[in-house]
Length: 286
Image 1 (tube, rainbow, N blue to C red):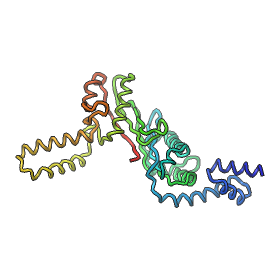
Image 2 (tube, rainbow, N blue to C red):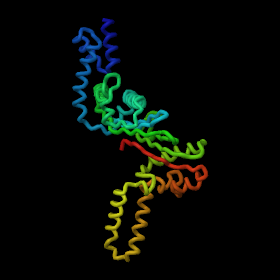
Image 3 (cartoon, rainbow, N blue to C red):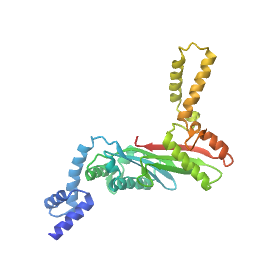
Image 4 (cartoon, rainbow, N blue to C red):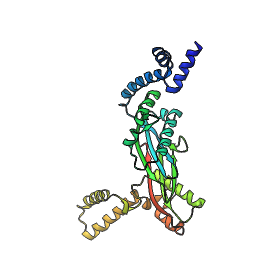
């Protein structure tokens, strides 16, 4: 009896399945652990396929880096309760660490799901985790960036762990100095990005389709005003300037000093060290 309980415990530790399920699997497979694992996997996959149609709007985003790349990954669960648990957070950590080992800048979400880790595809591993926690899990976003030839800073908002939370922003930058105050400023910019979620560094980097759409909206809004054309042009110019101040990083009011734009801060406080933003990105549950 003691031996049977030990086998049940071992099977539970390896699969995360319930006591009775493990006991049944061992009984049906003459106490053979490996066959019992296969038996539970098949049952787990069947359960996962039913759960996979349920909405997964909670979860967490993770940040991982090595000397060559940094990774942002978003993994959704059904409930916030599951997302905060160590089982789920360990799973996000497991995915991130394996992505770093792959060290592949061209990897995308679809190809990652088909990648094998220890003889199983990531999709199969996800299905096993679905069966383990009893909730639908979806890897919904994956972004990989080159870290070379610049400095990198990141910020985690509503952190569950130091590199996992609700929102994560990253900033790639260069400067002639790497003193502590520069690192703090870069971290503060990451916090700004997480809070205001800009679309581009400045208007020159903003998608032309977005600019054209906003321009057309503003033109239609004032088309029937009856104002002279030169006045209308100035009004549109002012409206577009306001628009850029809302959606572009350099033109936004800095969250820690709202009377100044990010560009003002850089040009005044960090001009001598040539602080230059190369790239930013963020990933969020919402």
